[in-house]
Length: 320
Image (cartoon, rainbow, N blue to C red; front, side, top):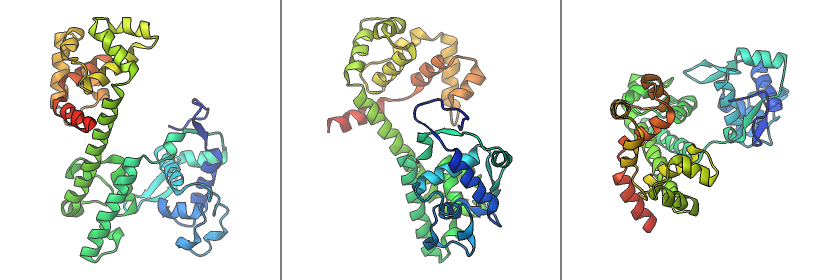
């Protein structure tokens, strides 16, 4: 989320860059996609800038920014309502109301530095989707944009659809393309999702062997409560719970019997039913449906998760 004040030491003020991007969109005679907009802002005449656009004030103004950083800023401005998608079929961009107001009255705009870089998994997924598009383009003798546009690809990376129904919600991906190309696209997305899940679990498994986690493990096994452990370690109770979750996921301790003593039976049963039946269970949705606090819901979610096979695989990976 973009803010008007700095809230964290890693926040970055993007007022000047935002103004440059919005001016470029305003000054272009027609709506263009994010890819072309980035080329313009970076002054990449060698990549096909239309005649006359080199004279725009914004041309080359973000030449020192990495292309991924520019792309991230454009996506943020769309998400925050400074820019909008003019035509979802092609991903062309126009000014939105907040963007118009900003140009009339520019102000500081802060964003977390993490928001200005694409994570490694999304980069990998983008590369794989490009390869799929290139392969299909060659097989069907169609230009790549006829398979799916850059904007559609960007939306796939951001939303990561889980099935054909969700894939069809991507602008430019109708029934025909979803049915024809969907299995390749969804297979690639799911592979990245599973890799990310496994990588996170491996990191958790390794982390559970450090001194802090082992100290919490000893206190837990001695029968100390979360409150007592937090007081002894000088940390919040939520931090202790996270240590316990990590230890459980790494197979260091078994939280199942403990959770049964921490959560009232009716609440545990209600949560169990939700997490087992929901197609895409989310804590916020569970909170709204069940009226239980987030700490309780996290315990219940862990309770219903089948971690045995993952633990076995992780122990093998870590040992090898």
